[in-house]
Picture 1 (cartoon, helix red, strand yellow):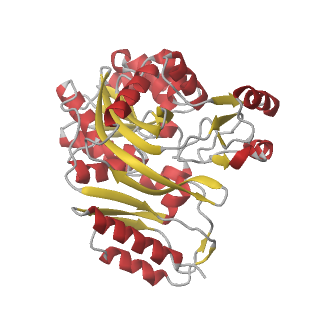
Picture 2: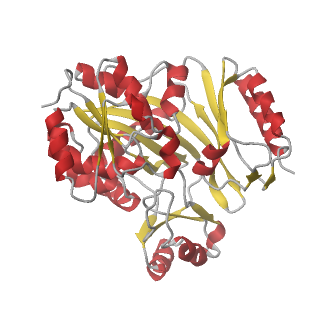
Picture 3: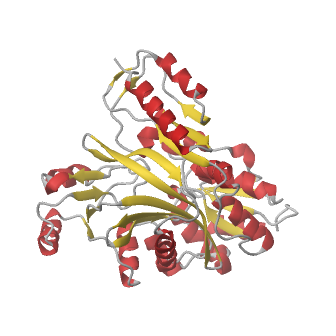
Amino acid sequence: MSSMQVSPAVIVDPYSSGALYASAFGRVGIPVVAVMSAPEPPNVYASSFRPQDFELILVARGPDVSDLVQSLRSLGPRCILTGCESGVELTDLIAPQVLPETANYPAKAGARRHKGEMAKAVAEAGIPGMRQICSRSADEVAAWIARQGLEGRDLVIKPPKSASTDGVTKVTSGVGWRDVFASVLGSVNRLGLSNDELMVQEFLSGVEYAVDTASFDGRHSVASICKYTKTDNGPFMAVYDTMEWMPAAFPGVDALKDHAFRVLDAVGMRYGTSHVEIMMTRDGPRLIEIGARPHGGGHPQFCRHATGDSQVDRIARGFAENGIVRDGYSLRTNLTIVFMLCRKGGTVADCSALDRIRELPSHHFSRISIRQGDRLEPTKDLFASLQMGFVALAHDDPARIAADTREIRAIEAGLTA
């Protein structure tokens, strides 16, 4: 048995926002054990890993997890949760063998990671969704486009197991989709996985939201809802502009929450955090995708500022008190994340201009990695944005945040020569 006096929480790949589980469980007196799905974190998450925060670190070594399972059983953990996208599959593999009573439904494991299986599970549950296909055959996709009447329509092509908009490409009017398909198929994404098949989807128009949830014994709770604003940046369609925390009540929120909860049920989420991205279209809500892990990029720490709570805190309290302690949320202050964006590549000529960002009236937090002389390339995905940095703006007056956002964009535009 474990030498720990308190039954620990186990976090698989505690990177990105998953790193915040340690402090959340620490607040309620529960030690945390880390499980790594590989000896080293993926490069895109390496900087967020804090090994000093964990009582013990275990590493999965190869496809045989029997030794890992035995080690975890000896610890007598109270839960096994996913920290970030790279750990979803390992969590779903080991949790049913160690703690079947608090595992998500094993039969739906594929739907919690693979976007094709996800779409299938949602359709089988009778939930309205977008038109999409997952295939490695361009000819099969061409036949599907014809059957769906999507010739000449905007399409989206993306890998089924990528993260943070990596590899997501908009094909305007469907022109040249075969070339895009061929260029992405077989490439390796930022998590080190081969894109051996691709999703092809109709392009949805509307307002995109992220519904961030905590689930305990199949009961779902909304910890926050954020509105995304994205922008086209040349050929790259899924480039983040801003993310704004929404008040608890706004037009369409009930339909949004109901859709998110139905999706969570469809993919078998019973315990843990989820990040549900939904487009509110003129025909109603449509799932874009779900991440069976916390909202990334450090989202929970900003959610704490905006609402006084977060999805990781709720799960920690849930396992400390054997149930979700709260449903819904209230907005304490307006908060917007402004993602750094490079429109035109070039060399950073005046990095000192970035210092003005910290003097903005609504500045709450910023992490900017741009340095004098850096060569910036046009931003193509969320990973690229986060590598440059982001700014959190918080203020009682939303007009102040809007003005400061415009100032950030003006500073940004003058960086490169």
